[in-house]
Image (tube, rainbow, N blue to C red; front, side, top):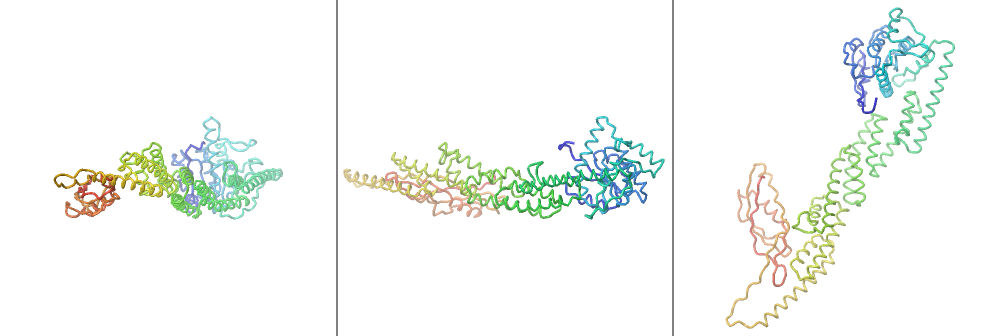
Length: 573
């Protein structure tokens, strides 16, 4: 059965609710279960076996007679020979059944009280066996034939033997008898006593040989696991790590103490390594560690605590790296969160924030490279940087180099405009450089030269006035021509929550002046509708507007503007 094939279900047949609850309730995997109180009830529902691979049969549900349990086990295999049969019961009764003629039909047997973990360990190989039986049946092979080569028999013939002689104990062969001891596993974590079986004189040697081979295999696997532990190969690479080696040992011998202790050592090493991975921001590897711990110890609530801790650690790290981390650290963190694929609570929002920052950085870099630097051009670098800083959408590590680059480019443009005697554009660009607050010395030098130029222009204008002939009649001098203030950015108003809730719309007419720094001042409300509902929101909005200040066209100096009146609209759409 391929990995893409849906996992088949497991049928538990038991009238003992404690057995059912121990197996079904103790399940921590994606394995699905169904349960019935008796074999008769299960066989009356053929659909139960359509997508089922394993049958766990509690022999006590058949009554007090061992013979009845044997007969019902045969019926289960007659009904569907692809089903992998596991038995649950008291050790003495299981011993009797497995010495009977149905022993070849039984895959595993478990003593009461049942140990769910021991049963679950057998599922992987049991599912594989079911897949093989299904494939053989589809290929036309007779899977009704069971037992070792020297004593092969069909399930139907075993049933007939039971009818003619219910007490029969078939000679199932030395190997099959030896396997009985391997089939039975103790429950409740108790040590299993040695199973005593009456066999021909040759049997002990065969049993000893098989046990010796098993010990040799498990010893080799345990040694490979120990080597993997020393080399730090706890759960990877696949097929060559400590956990997989120990699991293979336990599939062969669920009582192997070395493997059980080894799994605990792997878990301890993983928990220690988890803290290191989180400290190093290797969150994807930390998640793999948690998943491995859940496999080793699925009922340990500490695993959920680690998962919660991982989400909090991711959030804290992203906040820290965006505040003080380098560009490389931010990029590395984004790559790690991308590999997590939102598997951890908190990683999704953190990943989205970093993705949004990466997208904003790309836009800023594109605008800088294309020379799209200032308003009103769409997507200009100045507006992108300003919005990113105001909304905390860009980290310090990513903003600082780009702000410096933008400031240098704007200062260069301002110097070029000054060289061309365009003092108005020089002033606009200088105001933007001032807000970026990076190259203060360069801006101060330019400001001195602008002031000197303005004084020179004013002096020349005064000399020209002196040389002009006096007018015959006294006339008033013309007022200086003022270039009006021009808006650079206009912040939208915040809709009052009460008005929004009530579905109100309206407008506010405000009047204000623009000072020499391009900032609105002396803001007053001239009129509004309805009442004063929107007055405060309108004033706060205008306070955030920014202008290129009004200028004396003669001197080029910034001046306070005349009063500006505008209407701020509030519309629900």
